[in-house]
Image (cartoon, rainbow, N blue to C red; front, side, top):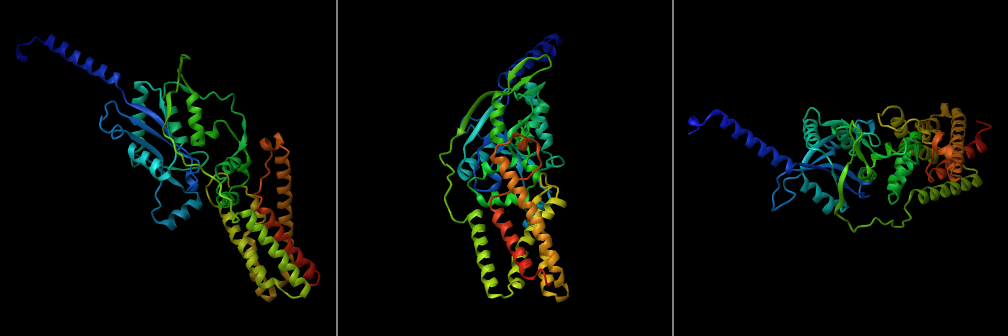
Amino acid sequence: MLDYMPKKYIKYLITMLLTVMSLTTHAEKSVFSLVTHYQTEKTVYTAWGHSALRVTPAFRSEKDPFCDDWIYNYGLFSFGDYTKFVYNFVLGRTDYMVGSQPFKYSFREAVKYKKVSVREAVLNLTDEEVDRLDKALQVNEMSENCVYRYSFFFDNCATRPRLMLEKCVNGTIDYHFTDDTLTAQSYRQNIEDRLSNSPWFNFGIYICLGEPTDRNMTDSLRMFEPVHMHEVFTRAEIVDSLGNRRPLVVSDNFLHRSDTKSECQWTLFTPNIVFWVMFLLVVAHTIFYYRRKKDDYIWFDSAFYSLYGILGILVFFLSFVSEHACVFPNYNILFFSPLYLLFPVLCLVKRFRPALKYFHIFVLGSVTIALLMALVSDVWIWADNDYFTKHTCLQSFHPAFYPIMLSLMLRSGSWMWRYGVRR
């Protein structure tokens, strides 16, 4: 029959079909949204929450509204060989991946296993922007592109979706920062807030992270935190080349609200209590042997200095070998020093014992400097000095570091008092 139909009518028919298909596609387009998992302190890497991009297709199943939705996640990593993973992590070779999965699996993990609230902000993107973002994510997910070098503060599961979105919109995103000046919070203060119920995690991070962590964040840099970034997105606008504005988010709601509240359970086993008790034991031990005029330094101090020497290896390795951000300079090396591991050798080899005097002079000098730094930084922070929080390079110290420093000074000082003159 088509053989007898005039060619111009065939053209009209094809044009009409294409128009109808186009109108249908534009009427029901795919939708992107920012999905945020709230914080949980079950593990240290979930204490800040999580961000991901969800894509809802134009046509969805009526039986299961989540079955056709996909989510792009920039927080994937594999333990694989656990020893190798830990070694690479300490080195700073934190290779994470982007990957997609059905949204219902991600949602179930957040609700059933993490037991956290899930919040969604539907993005106000044009058809062209949706198509561009969809293609960019698919390209990014390819095996040759999916791996990236993760950085906790500067390149993580929140900053990556934000960067992808900024590249794909027609224009720029105005986050309504008054300016990019420093906020009232440092990276370290942010860590303390998030790990308030995990004192040992917080203590460990204090050991590993150095002076840059005490620098205050800008409004822009603080968006590494998923929940905070979600809040910023809700008031942001897209500005095109002509200056026209439209909201970045058209709707914002909770897909699930968790009733689980993170409560601080009081316990004696905290770094502050543990190390102050250790300090009192060191004091008692020192007084006991001083009164009896017996040598106690060989075995006791060998174990004592070796403990902090092992921690010193970690601090040294992170500061001078690893690729992690915010680990150098780290003034904790003044009292967590790998040089402390020399003490057993100096004690057990008789011809090296004369060098013990210089070892203890080194310990007293370095720990005294660290103690003065800790006191000055704490006083300035307590005084809420704006100049300190924004411009100085002093490092703040964990309260449990005080008994550690005092213990080191006591042992070295007591040795100098008893043996320093004649050895």
